[in-house]
Image 1 (cartoon, rainbow, N blue to C red):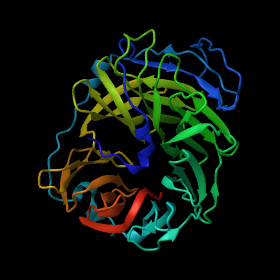
Image 2 (image 1 turned 45 degrees about the vertical axis):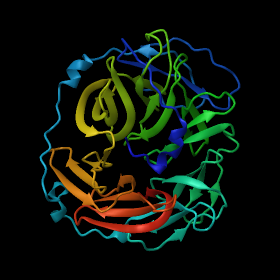
Image 3 (image 1 turned 30 degrees about the horizontal axis):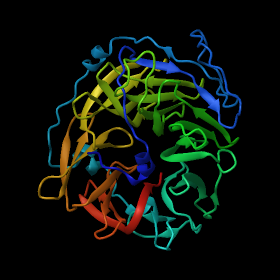
Length: 434
């Protein structure tokens, strides 16, 4: 079972069920609506000759029906084009070249955390060596999770009771309910993410008025223009876990749920990953050959390459690296042979796979994905809740259950020194500062 992160608390509210797709390898459509518009838009046929170089105009938005894009080559051929590299085990830390790096100063690394030390669940910052604990907010709200902006000057904080996100200025603790007027009827579901330039926010939400499933929304902070990206009629898909490409041109996200349309063989299981291009407001929903599920959008590793969790029916899920071309077509699929509870470093170079043997202590296998070399770390912990790579590949955070409590303890592991150090006790969630 995949370890659930506190950063994805709201995702548990979504029922990520699936249906079976047959003949389509993937479909593409543009179906976007203006959030605060009261007028319905009649869908029109897609003109396949339309230029893909249109400027990005958030308002007004167009609505179009799905169009099938041709596959460049059979997906079966792509699947067998590359195979995974064997993974020899080594008992040293040179897979990340520790000997060539300067010693790591933990005081240079910072976390944002939520905790109830003041009676309310407020936001705090703390350095990775446990120093300089600073309280950011004094709102009386109950913040469940947060994520930093790319420049680390602002946080997005989510309140579970109201299903709202708030902008928080780190320097002065000012909290802004910035969607109160623009989108008062949205129940926002974490996780959510900033664009690489910090000018846009992508999140998923459910419209309380229509009681529809979760759609993707993109907010332009400078203009407060809000774009809703919906799935076509006939599909009942939940959007989840939006991820920006490194160049900010695409948003990759998970799209799972029950649904049926005229091209399917009725109701069944279907795992999908959706890709939205901002420049021309095009939405592609990827589905592989029949009997193959896309489980979850996981990570971008380059402007045209991303990693997803997927599996063939009746098998356990594995990670795959997907390469696409400029037409948003899949041209290569490389299996990584990582189990579903693995986590991949932010640059896509390394992966951690946890294993919980019968003796109760957790073992972490760390693999260099480029050459297959690996190392094993035995950690003196039994109650593992979550773990997360830092921005420096030498460290990752380990969240453990606080014994006899519903809170967690945040630890940091230095892979090079094999040192596991307690950062802070009694928190509810955490986020790495960029």
